[in-house]
Image 1 (tube, rainbow, N blue to C red):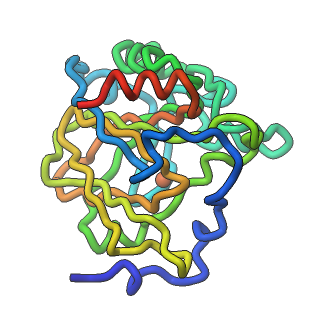
Image 2 (cartoon, rainbow, N blue to C red; image 1 turned 60 degrees about the vertical axis):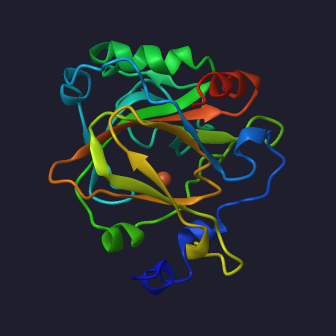
Length: 234
Ligand SMILES: [Fe+2]
């Protein structure tokens, strides 16, 4: 089987993203960097993701994104890092898409934690080798004051893709993903999980025929997120 080390070229931009910082982190993520939650038990009407406005934005493959919360409420995938108006990935404001997806918006608010960018990803099918070429770490905590909570991301799978999975790997001593730490998160409809995507290299292998849709939300680590995760464990 193909090894991730054969596919990535060094230097890789992800390697330089900080791993060790003084930010507040959640003990529940300490060991593995991710936590699987109970499946979502509410049904979300398809119109809540199909009727949104999507933007051409590439991240982790052939993707489009529908922003539901951004830095200023505008439909803009870069919002938080606008030159001259840089902000950490929290304090998100709902966009015009939010009114079209009330179940999803309610879910994000029900977490009770400070959220930043909230968006739906539309990912075209990509096989395992193709996905590994896109594996990366996120720069979630750029401009995040070091005495505040570490920003992590949560997923809620909207389409049913039992043959697809998210690949997670710790960073090895060489600054690249360590294949021996690979973990695969299943992506059936309703699957939910929280990942420290600045710590773990991640990408989705999507073996389906049709695009996969999922909700991705940035949340600040702290007592509120901790309580919510504890209440959602399997
Ligand atoms: Fe990412």
